[in-house]
Amino acid sequence: MRGIGRKRLTFVAAVLCAVCSPGARSQYFWHDPLKLDSKAAPGPGVRWESPDPLPAVKPPLQAEQLPSKAPLTLPELTEFALRNNPKTRQAWLAARAAAAGVGIERADLLPQVTAGYGITRTQPVSATTGTVSPWQTRFGPSISLSYVLFDFGARASQIESAEYRLLAANLLQNRVLQDVVFLVEQAYYELLGLEALVRTNELSLKNSRTALEAVQRRRESGLATIADVYRVETQVAQAQLNLTRSQGDLEKAKGQLAAALGLPVNESLRVQTLGEQPQVREITDAMSMLLERAKANRPDLMAAEAQARAARANANATAKAGLPSIEITSSSGHTQFRDDRPSATSYSLALNLRIPLFSGFRDTYSIRQAQAQAEQAEAARDSLYRQTELDVWRAYYDLRTAATGIASTEAQVKSAEQTAQATLARYQAGFGSILDLITAQQDESNARVQRIQSYLDWFTGLARLNFSVGMNDILTAAGDKK
Image (cartoon, rainbow, N blue to C red; front, side):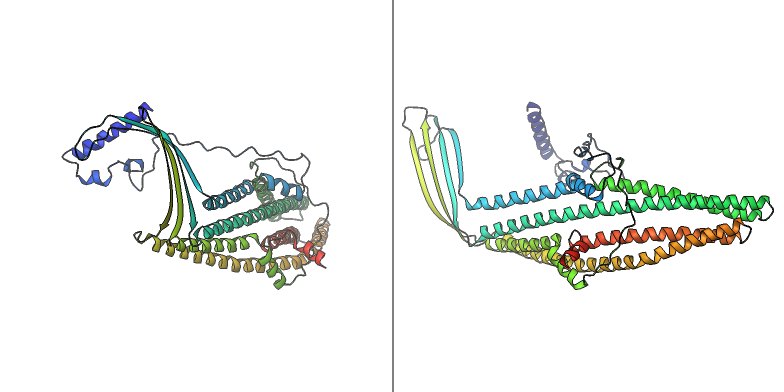
């Protein structure tokens, strides 16, 4: 404390010296009297260097441990993410803060009571004769009360605004939960798709090496040229490159899933793969029905409506702030003296009418600002309304397209596999060209990749449609309705 006091005295003395000095009115002093320009970089192209140690970034809260070392299913991953993802905690704390905001506004409905204890030592001087009286010491407790009886509904509008903000915070928390579920589903399905892609690329590399062995044997027999060998070696290198890229993408997908779970990206994860070929069902709900569900189920859309109403209530409260108000005040105090004079207790009760007359146009511009903010919130609600319709529209047709494409890719894979096997057998038997074999193997690999992509598009499309409508499972809901 002494050090701080000395610094303050030194600072005040420096300012006084600067003001009293001959160059006190220099442009630099009045432009930056506190010399704060030194706190920033000296120029726009110069890197700023902190003179003090920078604050260390704290690591996140200790994450929960995964429930088991066994492969985790999608429901288990989702449940873990809802507990552990920082976004859910952030949204929950925002809702708690909004709930406290309602309490702050409701506090204005109650009386404001203040207690104090004062000690005063004075030496009175007569204003007429100039006679100096002896020192007097007064001390004692006091208590005061104030309460607004009537304010044209300003407090009610402020409470209404706070309650709508709380409603919006709770709805946004629900939307964050849906967002986390969607992130986990996306990462999970992408991880499964990339695992299948790695297996497909491994099979393609194996087939390419089989073709290379076949062409090398034919080269030794004089039935193939060196150009055929080089061509197949190129195919093997390309297959190896595709496998390496898919393995890298798989590792990135694992990190993305770990981040969605609220875990470090290098966390070792084991997920349960699909035991059998997934059953794809086409959606039967009409687009109009999905749009109506989205308008009724999207928490963020309802939160936007609540935020618009909160802004409108705040505008009403701001408009009423400049109106008269009636207030009752009372106070009581007990005064004691250090000499032989008796103590005294005072009481007061007042009824006040406050009439704001002029505030430098502050009220005028406050009302304008609140009205503009209310209209801005309503425009944001309308924008989200249209965006919701567009999200449902796109997700709906993406899902339908993916569902119809799966059947064609299944047939394509079956045909490509049979063609590749027959072409390899013909080539090993001494018939057919190496170009036919390479083409057949590439067609087989592309067909498998397209099948994986079709299933991935269908699963992610279903998750996106669920997220756009604001429901957990569109297909399950449609089946229950039937």
